[in-house]
Amino acid sequence: MTTLHDLSVVEIAAGVRVRQFSAVEVLDAALNRIDATESHIHAWVLVDRDGARAAARRSDEAASRGEGGPLNGVPVGLKDIYDAAGLPTRCGVGFLSDTPKQRDAESVARLRRAGAVVLGKTVTTPFAYSDPQATRNPWNQERTPGGSSSGSAAAVGGRQVPAAMGSQTAGSILRPAGYCGAVGLKPTFGRISRQGIHPLSWSLDHAGPIARDVAGVSLMLQVMAGFDPADPGSRHQPTDDFLGSGTRREPPRIGLVTDVLAYAEPNVREHTLEVAKRLEAQGASVSEVTLPESFELMLAVHLIIMQAEAGAIHANQHRQHTAEYPPRLRAFVEAGQVLPSDAYLQAQRLRARIRTAALARIEGLDCLLTPTAGNVAPDPSTTGDNRFQGIWTLLGLPTISLPSGLSAERLPFSTQLIAGPWREATLLACARWCEEVLGTLPDPF
Amino acid sequence: MHVGSVSSQQDALEQLTEAVDGAFGARDDELRASSLAGTAQAIWILSQQSLGAYEAEPDFIAEAAGGESA
Image 1: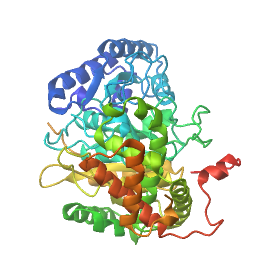
Image 2: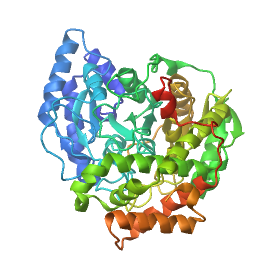
Image 3: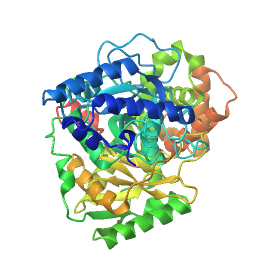
């Protein structure tokens, strides 16, 4: 039997709009689910029960007047690097101020204007880097949920909340979403404002949603996309009909990126080839393509840029709180602060060259296809393998991860799709088509 | 240290470790050693690439000049 906590973003918004159920009932279902499962997965740092209830009541009042935005009454979680008015932003460390923020991040403000109910803050690895936290995978509590958007992915995968916000500098939206059996979307660099989100790397940071299905991330993107003068990376680009584009029925033209498969574990490699066969059997055109440059070079360029920028961003804070920095982040930003300037500049130049070559690879195709990660969720001593996501983050291209089955250990497999810049409508349409072929996952609990 | 000066991955690691130790003090830390090894490998890979003078400019140069990037 479907209960309210099982419903998707689109189903909740539709149900609240026609008053099939109330936003307060949806909220209560989410809170009950959190109470029942949180001790297993530890996805939240703060559940704002009172604030969420007040917002849900406003959603119901709006619905009763025939008003309310496209996300009216939909509960959402925010990774704890997003500012939300009235709540502190602690970024996964103990030394930041507990003083509530005065204003929302721009993306959060847009979610609220669309009627979303901010349910609280989800666990992030410290400053969205890779030191693992207490959050566990809803499919197996001996496994990592991935990171750095650990809590957002675990909360959505564990059906505590229909959607949550993440951020990605290497693979921090798609990988945790993939490990936890959710859908993660990283839009084109510049599509969603990063104002009010704690940075890790200016030229690599992306904001994006995690939801239960492709339609959910499409609707979230619809309300958040658009230029913001407060984010220097934001771009003037038309906002397409992201949700409506998913109704297209033509089978997609897919490029299977074969050379990355050598870096995946055997079960992931076999699963990805099987996925490609299933899509082809349903009418998709699947051709084999290769990376624009070697995997190792793309990873090296990504690492140097991210490390140099993180070193600069953290220089002052690291000096003041050195002993409180978690070990992985501390090592990363210390080396970032001594990297030679020519390493950073050469990496940025190579990035431009790789991007040009990558766009040529996508020409004539709707999307590329790879595994989301080279493995299923590993043990919680790490946040997993970010290589398969990071190479596309480097290029600023839109990417999405889809659940595509369960492993023999009953852990989610996930498939990543990649499109050309600003082609989210195409990407989401491909993803909806693939989702219909690949099916959905059951409740992990 | 600069990219053009490294003669091998091991040399990159030694130069990088010396720079980090000099800035933040030496310490015995497995995660740190592993992180430095990864960065040294990346520097070595970059050092093997050649780019023409105007073959590719960093995006932010075009941006600063009023253009658009990804």
